[in-house]
Image 1 (cartoon, helix red, strand yellow):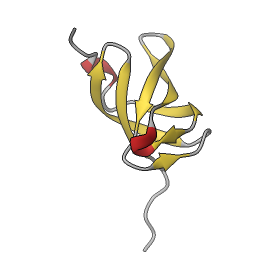
Image 2 (spheres, rainbow, N blue to C red; image 1 turned 135 degrees about the vertical axis):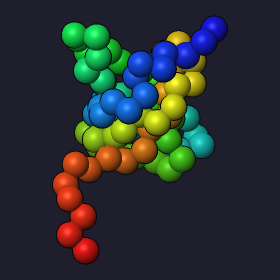
Image 3 (cartoon, rainbow, N blue to C red; image 1 turned 90 degrees about the horizontal axis):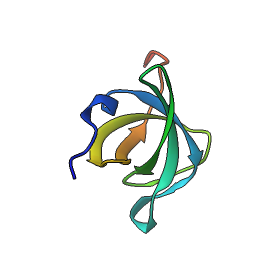
Image 4 (cartoon, rainbow, N blue to C red; image 1 turned 30 degrees about the vertical axis):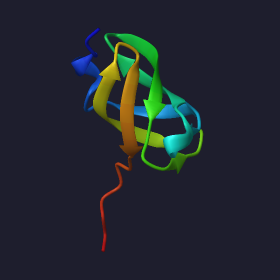
Length: 75
């Protein structure tokens, strides 16, 4: 079954921590006029409450995420 490409590029918040290669967490994403929950996979563990950017769809209810900050880089 194909993934949901409309979620790619959305920012969400982890509701359950990811464990990197150890397993997924969960991310809450505002999409389609509401909020949806997806399984969230990341390269390294990320704590619950982290803002993340959805970078890939891994199936109908699973996504790949990376850490996200909307703060400007001041370096």
